Amino acid sequence: MSSQPCHRSGSRLRISLVILLLLWSLAPMLWQLYSSLRTPESLLAGLAGLGGGWTLINYNAVLQANPPFWRYLLNSSVVGALSTLLTLALAIPCAYSLSRRGGLLKVVVGGGLLAAAVFPYVLLFLALLQVARQLGLANNLLALCLPYAGLSLPLAVLLLQAAFADMPVELEENAILEGFTLWQRLRWILLPLMAPSVVSTGLLVFLFSWNEFPIALTWLSRSELQTLAPAMARIAGSSVFTVPFGPFAAATVLGSLPLLALLMIFQRQIVAGLTQGAIKG
Image (tube, rainbow, N blue to C red; front, side, top):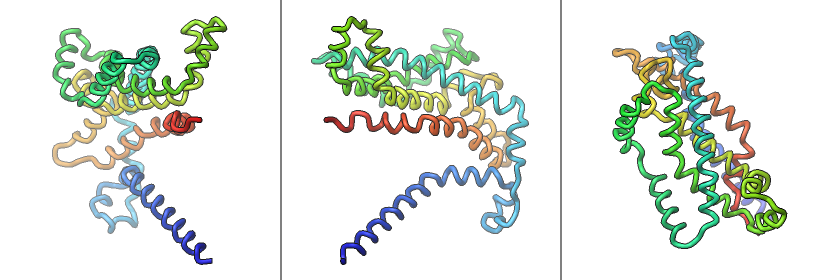
């Protein structure tokens, strides 16, 4: 009988910890949403201004800006989608080849990819800027896909290589006996089975491209070509004497909506991709 109160108290403690963790994780988003719906006076008043000051003027200011805010969302979406497709197109064959090799070559290549994945790309910023100037890639929206794909490729190869390694070799052996070519084995057998890992990797690449700031800031000087991150920085620094907290918060909320939609659509694939290969047997 004494075990039931202990079990209930343990369950309550776990639920309380989960709620606290959830609030801790959602606190920045909730604060941005709150700030986007408040007037500057009510924000400065703090708790004393909770009784009033609710407004949509911040969203109107963002949506009526010139260039329009949807242009930044479209630019980021195009760059993110093309960067993701280019990265996956290069990473999938590289990861497959690496997963089917062994010995010293695999160790050396894997170590090099790991070093490249954790290397702070900001240190390459000046070199990339010089390359962009020499090749005339400035103010070219599609040119951003090249550095984004190159910077995302090492991590994408490592993640997909682990997913390929979890695929049973017997599946390919049977397919070879049936006369399947390498492309057919990838297209009809391996990639459908590891689709969650491909989706998870693609979303990571997309998030990096969506949030990347220094390269987009320096490669694109024309306002109508800017992506979301440098455009929001321009909103935050639009005034010398005051910081437009409300419009910046509204832009943050609007800029997060496409990402939230993607995460909701591919929620199952993301969870399956994170757990794929964790249980064998």
